[in-house]
Image (cartoon, rainbow, N blue to C red; front, side):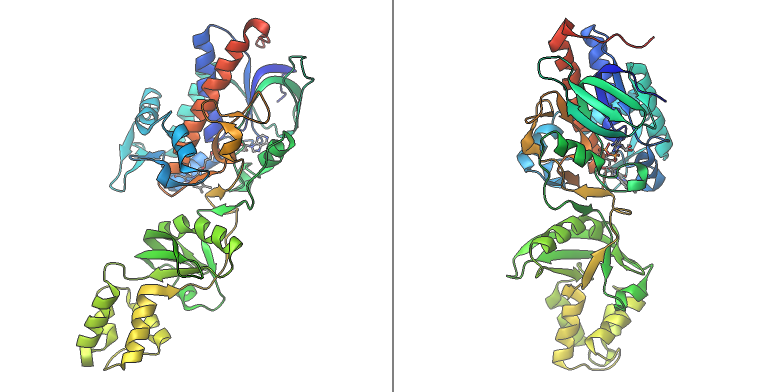
Length: 432
Ligand SMILES: Cc1cc2nc3c(=O)[nH]c(=O)nc-3n(C[C@H](O)[C@H](O)[C@H](O)COP(=O)(O)OP(=O)(O)OC[C@H]3O[C@@H](n4cnc5c(N)ncnc54)[C@H](O)[C@@H]3O)c2cc1C
């Protein structure tokens, strides 16, 4: 498939953010009465890989309550400004109009009633088609240069499917997570080539953590239980906490609580090797209460106290790690050690599973370099941004898609409005 020689607006990347930006750019153009030519290009042979795998194939489209505290990266005030432009109710209405009703689960997550991510992708693609935007793929954007000043040319874009000029661009290339889907971080290089800085470091987010070889947790693979994780600095200051389900794996730890804290751990560890990640295996019971129950258990022993609350395999391991017998009286120092292991065990994290399995990317183009009302670059006029290429990442629960929808909406409508404002100086005729 070839790209046209010229277009008015080129959307680079047709993932969640790029598709949403496309729909809203196309719709806004129709409303303006102009017919700018709008194209979206993507490296992928099959579009929407990440939408299809999301939420275990069900696609967690958004969450019933979303605010800036669900995100990390750029400042909360900046994130809020974008989020409030396109809220959860608007997302639900958009998908309902497109034939995909959403349902809310007990966790607050919203999924399509079909329980099928395919319906979400199909609806988006159909809306893009209806909005008059043309999708070209596979076409990987390899380089972008600003055109000659004053020529009205906008940008010169080199793709694997030919070169073209575009008056405006939306960069919606995602981050680096799941690179086989096409999101290989090349968008960061494109942003940098147009004068943007990138936050340092750029790390996996929502990623399972790897524990030291031979650690007993690796032998508990498959076990899932509710926990609380806390990240502390060398000074003891608490930097982050997360609560929820944790899954022991043959390499370490995963599950929502671990995924949520992973970006905070990796960022903190990058800045200060002394940070500690602690796990409380029994958050429902305060440490003093556990200590009292162990004291009162006397001859029944610690396993009898732990067994009602923890999986047997874990309870036995914790006793063994503390050097406690599982039955009978235990001396005070071993009891204290066991309480510490149950309620604040330090995790010897030696790595993470990397971008190949991470669900998101921490870091990217700082929002400080973007005009939030239009998502237009402060460094490079005519360039807009949407989605995960920006320095914003959400916790598990539909927040990353919500960011893609909101920023995609702002970028798409604003880029179209800017074309209309540039006005009749322009429109490249749409292809026949
Ligand atoms: C396994 C998994 C499950 C997830 N589940 C959920 C979930 O249930 N709910 C949720 O909210 N979030 C989920 N996420 C996160 C969510 O998928 C992303 O945050 C979201 O897709 C980001 O959208 P985006 O459009 O910015 O980037 P992407 O979806 O990464 O899309 C970017 C697109 O740009 C294209 N591209 C990149 N570079 C170029 C280039 N140079 N030229 C042309 N095209 C290019 C890529 O091919 C890709 O199609 C999940 C992620 C993963 C990996």
